[in-house]
Length: 346
Image 1: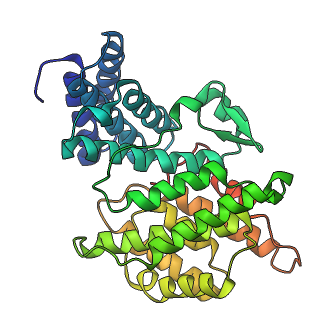
Image 2 (image 1 turned 180 degrees about the vertical axis):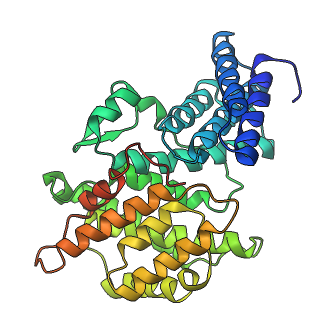
């Protein structure tokens, strides 16, 4: 804390709320800190133009409150989205990423971008319109899905220090351009060209070596995100350019390697890989991976992602003998919407 501003106090209370929740569970103390942080953020937003320091504090407080909501044992609230999108809007309104060349600012913006990208994935496949209306006010409808307000379509414009940012940027672009194959626009030459370019960029990343500077856990996470993003783009678009053998080899390599022996604290690649688990042994491997991961004290409740996986497997089994493949976008939406509130897959 470098000053006694309202935003600094908001950040302090957000830190105390998150720390209390993490160490003692959902308690009156944690809730009091959270409510006070929210009040201070509201006051900070009304104080006028924020300096870059105060904007950074405001963004960090919002992100901690978003983490508070996803860490809650029941994950019974969708309020995490408010905080993520609020942080994005502050970055845009204050041009925070342009104000400083400090690594701390870049790391903060990368943190926001990571969660914002995955929030877009969640909203892309969320189908509870009544709940969405209640939570988000007036959501934009695209192909029957709730999408983010235009103000929160954020693209970072700085050179990232996070090695995962390149693949997250491409995942964000996928959320922008991938169209349900049932939509006639998916057959246009312009769309096909954009899709082919995006797939080529992801393939280039997959072929590039994992940075030596990463620790083993981060290296595995980066590999999972790269392949999961490639799978998502191919399946969601029903890409006509896909080489099945290449995709199958990538999936098999993950099941033979990380899925069999590692943990996966990142829910997006876990969900995408679970969708590829057609055989019993693969599903057992996913369940074992979840079991190993749940033993990690750092991991929040996995109820939302396991609910989604189970719902997806039920649908795949129901249509196992069908000659026509189940629409992948619909499949993810069924899984996502098996939860009563919109889940975070960060």
